[in-house]
Image 1 (cartoon, chains in turn cyan, red):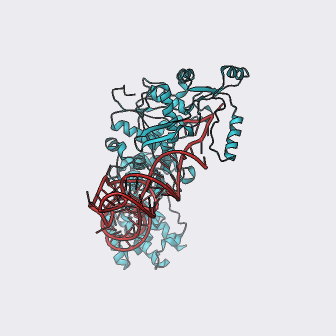
Image 2 (cartoon, chains in turn cyan, yellow):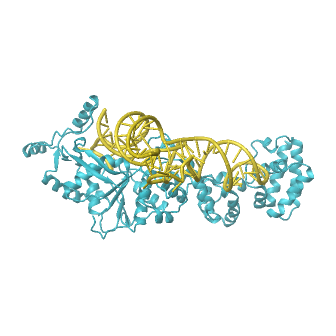
Image 3 (cartoon, protein in one colour):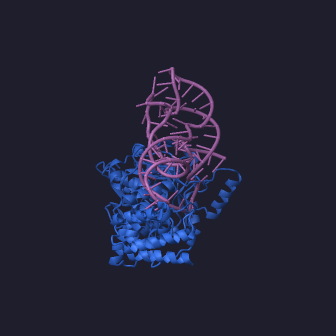
Length: 493
RNA sequence: GCUCCCAUCGUCUAGUGGCCUAGGACACAGCCCUUUCAAGGCUGCGGCGCGGAUUCGAAUUCCGCUGGGAGCGCCA
């Protein structure tokens, strides 16, 4: 393990059984950052040893999600590398080779127990409040017995012969020494009856062969780590450094699941979160620089990330904070960038055409600055800009046109006066509009809000909108005056 | 049930024996700005789970308890 010039090699090893989960993305990120921060190698390895749970497009999603977040891999699918193949399903010959060593040395044995027997065993253990686990029924079968069972056509699994006594200890980079009594471990399976390796076995063979120096994975792996350590020992290999990252919990304290909102990277993407915010948020979930600074780009993280600053306790996923961060990042983008990123959402809502026409894009570029600071997710763009594109505003509740403490007549007067003034106005710049409308307020002897609100509702169809002058300026004379006229007529009934 | 991990504001966290009358951020409340909504600024609210021990002195060290989480598959 230390024979690769001291170069750090880490891997992210997802199984293609579903879309990339946010917890997996965080694990990937920490591995990636650790590699990048230390001039190491980041490897993507696909743990596809369970044919029954294989999900067709999950590999594609995992790779796309990593790319979307800005992570690249030095070795793995599409990247290649000298320690391949990087799909475990293509490495069966290797597991085969090493399992024979274990069988020969007596560290592993064949087990012919049926799943029915195992199931019954577990049920019995549960009924008696005993810890579940294999009862080592086949641990000491003779060769003759094995042959007999084999002749019956029974496909055995291969189990690891866990030492009955002693303690297995490993050093966790985050938590220090962790030990387990071997007697609490059971003889876990290394090779399934279909000939595929289990995670435990494939994992250590590959990590060793791929010269992985640091294993950084979720905390849920701590209980299986002693098994891995025992395996390394039986193989005569030196285990890599271990660091178990804290898990991400839901607001309710349990595992993060669909019930709590988005959980896969794809879902966050679809909801309009931007990768810069996701990465920053994920990094902060379990890592911090000094407790003060918390805005980091991927590039910056890669320079300041250290394992020492990773916390041990699990963290609750806060959608509120993510939302805030997303808004922060959206506000920091250029107008062109925001427009570009909002485009798919606007096209999906049929607000602009696909492909977008030049004049639509030019118009959009004028609109974006007005909504940029109001945008929390890109997916909100359609509802924020739709009125700019409507031919005519539909007032679902015409009474909203009338400010409180004013009546219909006065409101009509305001709308009419505004219409006249704006019809004659030739300077639709904000600077030109402002004195005009403020002057209107003064001449009507009303308060600013009383005059502006009816105009706002008339031209936008809503009571909350971007600034009035900016909006009118972008809308232009034709749209503005026709909307004022329309609102006036609605009020007249 | 057994094993393991964890434990500072509601949430994410700073803190590595005295700098802590515990700092920052999100959320929340109030105020300011203001044509609405945002954004922004200011202020406030709010925490070291409990009990022992060590020490001149503990959020910081040790032990116990409690609480939370994870694991215990021919899944990873």
